[in-house]
Length: 98
Image (tube, rainbow, N blue to C red; front, side, top):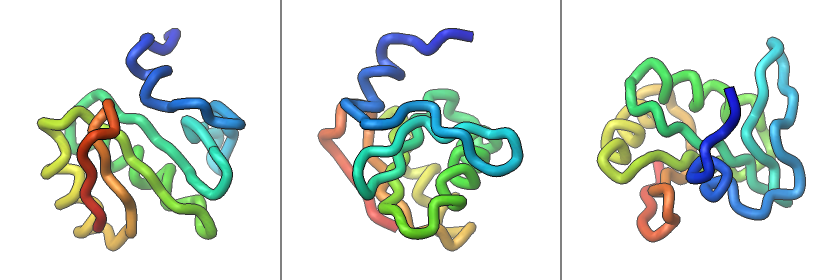
């Protein structure tokens, strides 16, 4: 399924997009020392999958971009999984660190 325009915008000007990772999965983007994952679905299962994709990047700063209404849920799930990640809204105006 092709990406929506808002999904592409949320990735930003990343150097590498759709980077293959272990397990036949793909990380949304790598930009310098940042691993970026955009999750617009909003369910806990989809957010957990996005967090597990980010967790494969050990020496990168991890950024999870979600709609603003899902930021609290994402922060709780990241804390529960023990993943240090920066959670931002899609327009990158607000952020939370876990």
